[in-house]
Image (cartoon, one colour):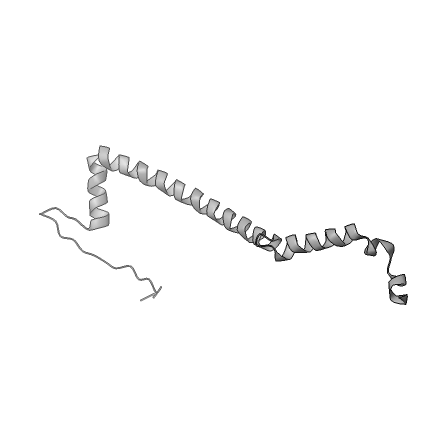
Length: 104
């Protein structure tokens, strides 16, 4: 009984105890707790950045595709660079790029 006399009155209040339990459940034990929500917000931000990047890439590729469909010189340049195509009277020499950074 002496121990209960030393506890302040606001800690023995039933509304304070109920609110504290409710806050603990919401913050730590619920399936949508505070930490899960923070993680989901971070994932949402990452996905929005990815969406923005891929939207920009789609726009650039569509512009390149439109240019390839409308300009035969661009189509020939693309075929030569990407697919190593050549004309009948040409020789093609492929020089590989050194990816290891050797200076030889």
